[in-house]
Length: 131
Image (cartoon, rainbow, N blue to C red; front, side, top):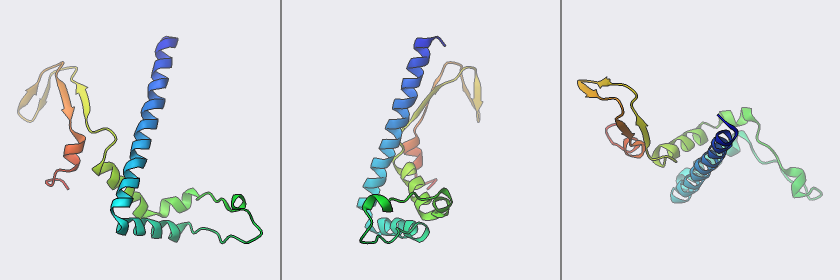
């Protein structure tokens, strides 16, 4: 890659990574608001593994800022399942498009080279035959 191509690729990675993450955060917030029972379970799971320290009157809010350690985060099974379910129900990329580079056989069907393949992730993830 020349410098301009490399710059363009880096810009794509930054924008695509930011957009998909922000979209995921949006849908997590939406799902928590729509399902207060799930919101409570997520909250309970977080509090079980990373409770908020008690704030004393002398301390400022800045002094009590706490980072949740990775070990505690790894124990939050309900939070993990919730976030994965949000990705299943509301994938940041609703479909993936690929082009075949050579002839392929899928079952008894020949797919010629240079065929555009569309994988509808959103539809597959909501199909009752699989979920």
